[in-house]
Image 1 (cartoon, rainbow, N blue to C red):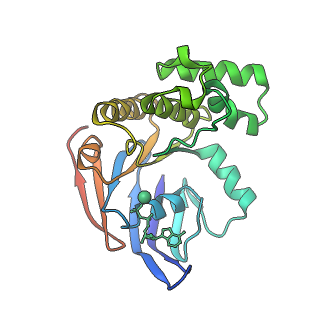
Image 2 (image 1 turned 135 degrees about the horizontal axis):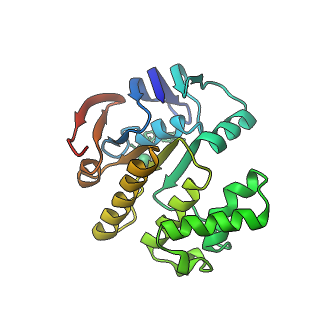
Image 3 (image 1 turned 135 degrees about the vertical axis):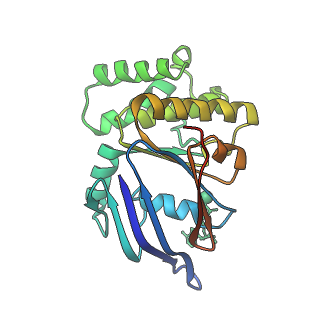
Length: 227
Ligand code: ADP
Ligand code: MG
């Protein structure tokens, strides 16, 4: 599903910062894995490249057999909309839209009509157990509820891969466990490949495979035995 080879990325704002120094990573369809590393180790940089939100300098990145490099913004957006779903630490919900509208938004960009997208959004809110809160604005929801809305939004386009950057970073430990359980269920039931970036050991241990990143390189790959 994902294959990256000798990937390098340097930031040039100020003095050059070589963040990824030859990363190799292969992810099979349907895997549930975490990328772990200390703050500043390059986890988000890697995830942003995987999500075609940022470019890389050298190496190769294949997503579902397609070389991803120096795409136009239009091409990148097209692939993102068709293949990828995103979940962020800070939820990234639109504050003046209610839960239902937030979940339905990706379908609006796909040109799906209002009635159909609202019906589908409601289905996904139901699956996430928060249909009763469909009319609430983000600031009327708890952290866990907001992340459930964000997960529903990520799922509504039926992505092949979900990329989650510290999805439990803003949640207490109980809620964090619930969200991880939900992500695992989605992986198991829908077969969606799931990559979770985290700096928390407990979160990583909930996944099937832990990839550790250190000094810009993959330092270890551990199978957890959850599967
Ligand atoms: P992590 O997610 O593991 O905490 P990041 O990938 O966000 O790490 O950042 C890795 C390093 O790159 C850090 O030193 C960070 O300050 C730097 N960095 C991240 N984004 C940028 C950017 N857009 N411009 C310049 N430096 C950046
Ligand atoms: Mg980060």
